[in-house]
Length: 376
Ligand code: NAD
Ligand code: AHE
Ligand code: ZN
Image 1 (cartoon, rainbow, N blue to C red):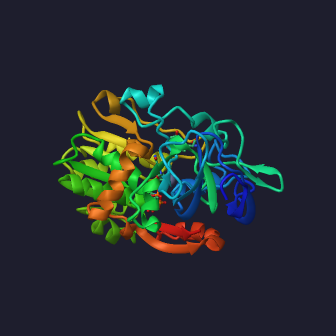
Image 2 (image 1 turned 90 degrees about the vertical axis):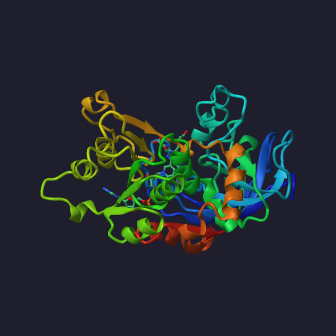
Image 3 (image 1 turned 135 degrees about the vertical axis):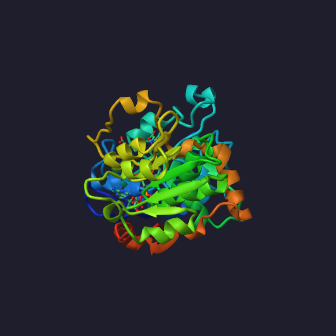
């Protein structure tokens, strides 16, 4: 198949808010510094739903969504040296070129090499590898894992241990890695108090990693009472449901400050709700509390707080992909999974085939779904 266009099935979103449609798509061969991947499994992340719904200001249609995949390299373009045909790989929506200002800074995982074209739904040469009857279809996040075959930039893919089941380690393509990085790259969590807002895959991953690094107290907060047992299973010491636990007119942040002798050392927003982000910041301890935004908010949404909250020593920060450099760090996470030091299996609550992918999106809204893995 190398050098030839491949016809395969993909889930295409033709317009904002529309369900995905399974289509036969043509996937052109990889050009220079590109890699064509046979995708075997993909998770569905809340961010796929966010873009499908039309809330993403960067959303483009028609598009092949998906960014939490695992697959096998089918062919490579000229000049590709980091992966080879047959490698088991995870596509990376946060590239790592190791050459740009960002990569060389040692300060961030955000890479500048392909981000501009990625945001336009195109490959780095400004064209698409996907088409249906000659009509180009947009790429998404540089990964488009809702296709049986996809093409990515070589800086946007990493090879991993072949002993690891792709139906599990595909989840390292986003959610679990994001949560892990958000905690391990934040100094000082050992021995500290932590509050986690939102107990989806991201929040549970933050809870689990905080427990792993030795946080002294981990308070999980979720409006869904069904999340209490999940949070405790992943290492939370306390669970608060703000819809039932608060006194009349009491805010969650005030309750948290009260029960923690002045506030938390660290808080995390894993909801994407800007009001929750404010509560998370204001639940931080005066003088040193640090609040990290992981959730993604809709176009037009803005955060606010009294500047006095920051003047008095709280820090507001955020993270993309947990600050993780995918090519450098994901192979180690796969090995950690094989050694049993990080959980993955525990997050998988639902399985679907490609034909049922819309049901997978529906599962996600049910509140009992942590991650749905799609068998492509
Ligand atoms: P999810 O929908 O599975 O989980 C969100 C949880 O928040 C749910 O359990 C829900 O009940 C809870 N919740 C909703 N409103 C709440 C409120 N007012 N107070 C407390 N809890 C509330 O989503 P997920 O897959 O875990 O993703 C979480 C967020 O992280 C999404 O916004 C997603 O887009 C974002 N995300 C960001 C990155 C990144 O790199 N920054 C990576 C992955 C996901
Ligand atoms: N396109 C959106 C922003 C979406 C967003 O924040 N994406 C996160 C990853 S979410 C993964 O589930 C991210 O990594 N952002 C950094 C980047 O470079 O996109 C918008 O609002 O415009
Ligand atoms: Zn994601």
